[in-house]
Image 1: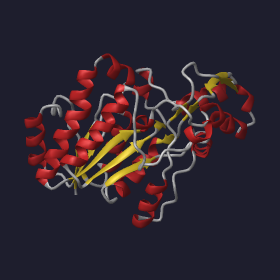
Image 2: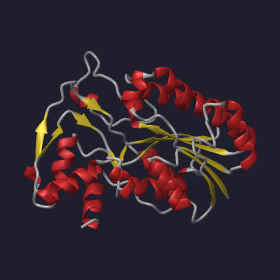
Image 3: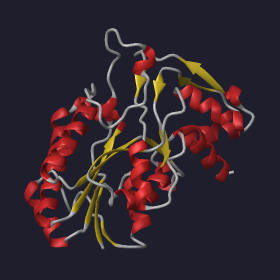
Image 4: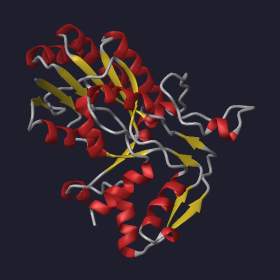
Amino acid sequence: MRIMLTGAGGFLGSRLLAYYREKYEVWAPSHKELDFSREESVKKAVQDFGPGVLLHCGAISDVGACERDPELSLRVNVEGTRYLARACKMAGARMVMCSSDQVYFRKMEEGESREEFLRPHRETEICRPLPVYGKHKLMAEEACLAEQPDSVILRLTWMYGKLTEAERQRGKGNLAAVLQSMLQEKRKQTFLTTDYRGVTDVEEVVRRMEDAWAFPAGRYNFGSPSSGSMYETVRAVLEEFGMGGLAEPQEGKGGLRNLAMWPEKTAQAESAESERTAFPDSAEGLRRFLAAEG
């Protein structure tokens, strides 16, 4: 099978390329080879390569950059996705779009209890995201399904994993790297008590992608469920190593933020395709990763 991959220079895309090029014929065009915000270029590229599956990881994922230049975000994140999905429909290819938990980012509504607000999000709820990035990811999901109804939308959490030397030199980081540094240096650090979200091992996402492109079309929460606030998650992980006191609580200035997702739909779809167990919760996944890294 032929797989076309956008965003292969990113954190997830680079790992998808490394893993699946050993099993399939994978084409991962660079931005110079394919600007997917240009419809004619997209149409020709997809028709010429003829993929069975197109994995769309390419995006402007910097939330701040999207706020500063919403027109560019719209052109790349929304219209680029639309063009890829349209080309997939014409070529008879399956489209897998990598979306984000940011589609769930909203404020607590008047009369809504804390318990109701912090309930993990499901794919069936109506989303009203506040950030430009979240709004455009939701618009991209809708465009994708409108142009290629046989598409799979994966709403991804924040991810972590082992960094390459090149990523470290560029100053890249993630939660697991922060925790490794804290444990090695016995250094305290603050984490938000008001930020509820899941975090997922990128390798879990990579290995499960092969199941995902066989899912029934639709939207899926694809990642680990939250283990509470970021402070609660981190403290639970550090306590496993006898260093829970390194995590210190900090209250966010913007109030509660809930991006936590419930991945039950994914677990049900995976059980139909393989014998995988569900994504581990965020704290358990981090514990496993840190233990494996020594």
